[in-house]
Length: 624
Image 1 (spheres, helix red, strand yellow):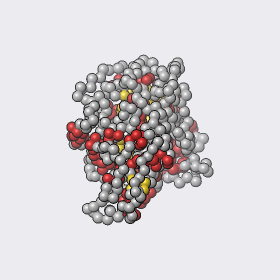
Image 2: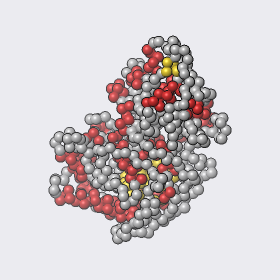
Image 3: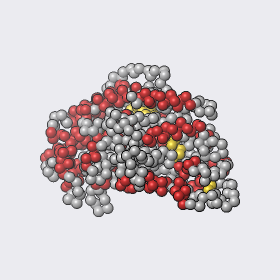
Image 4: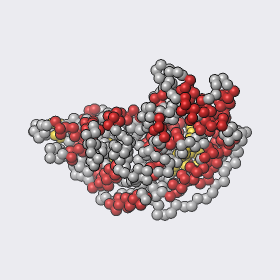
């Protein structure tokens, strides 16, 4: 689908900061919108006098959703936006207003952090604009006033929300996209652990990190999503087997320190920072940035449905507000999952942004690594029988109590390749730390009985997981299913060009994923979700390029056993084909919204500002 103005950056509106010097040429909307499919406009108004068209700089040739935008189209879009008369501006300082890099370098230089009572913080939420389409399939320019690119009153609540949320996001993890839409984003709240407005100092974001970071450098972890069909179903589906990505309104996750994001954003060699839980970068539920800067399942789904809720942001434990529906607990083994499940259900049922009965949900469960790491300490506790019993208890509870849910069950990874990080003398990883984190994997000698037992246990965990799901136990309802996503079952150690294990994919402890691996895991999970049962990737190489797949016209749904035409094999394993008992759930109270965001307006073009203040008051109340 074509749309116009997607590549407009903050450059196009910076004239509001210096209107004494910059004059805005009236925009012919027909001229500008004719660029929507990458065509040159049929005509452009010429600049008057000795005026000069400003060549506004951008850090990327890609628009907000990753689609490539040609330089010619970008230049013409900017010509529609601003004109700088040459006889008005002759001094160099004004020009940096149009150069995001120069502004960033100025603030990041630290010259405004030399006093205790003053600071300047870059709030980048305006760097990218996303416009919705109107009924004619054109960009909805009603968010701008008259014939120019000044924001209209309709945009003011969105601007205020974007600025407020930026102020409560740590430096280096701030949202960079303003989505102009009829609904307000959820408002952040200060946390008990972090009650202050974020500065570079209390974000632990020094001048050195600022110089190395910045928007363009973060894009290495972003992705390009070129899917043409991003529409939701015409009516809300009642069957999980006809669930499109855009139908999903809620995302949640359960698991251990991998999903908690431990060490995901840690700097090299900063081992102690691995204790920090970078939930905003978590592969299956993180919501920092956007798809162009941080690849997570949430950010992929937000391209299809910008109103998605549940994703985690920033840094913190599972009990912080920013964790939201990321209830993974660092260090968890399968026998410790049920408290996570109970807290997840509580949060989903009690949050005003979620209609528990009606909203479609994706829940991702990934766990089992710590069971393998601790197996030798208590073989009975971490037996295959107990492992699958614990997994079944979690899935039975979700099946009994959660309506309209698609559950991703990511099978436990093949953990033995981790041994290569200390076995190869060319790799600088601490055996002492690895021994503390995963003794039962690190300690056994090569070709030993203990190592064979661990390999057998690892594969038995995987086999029992397949047996449980292949029983059909969780396919007794039309609105619920559990799908195994096996991309890590035969995962191999990533290697550099010399064949050496590549520690750039790991946190400083050489055990947890860093942000690069989280991005690869997110891409792999998404692709697995679009692959049919019986044809899913099981040995994804994380050191190779992974391109994001798209739903097709023939297969527009997230793949389930039914829409994959997959027949579960006859299974004589321990899993029973008897479906778990389904309990009735309470109908959601009528005052809860049927959409995941609070509406800002009615069908009238006038902004209903009361909706904005109602949203603020609700979020303020939730701040405690």
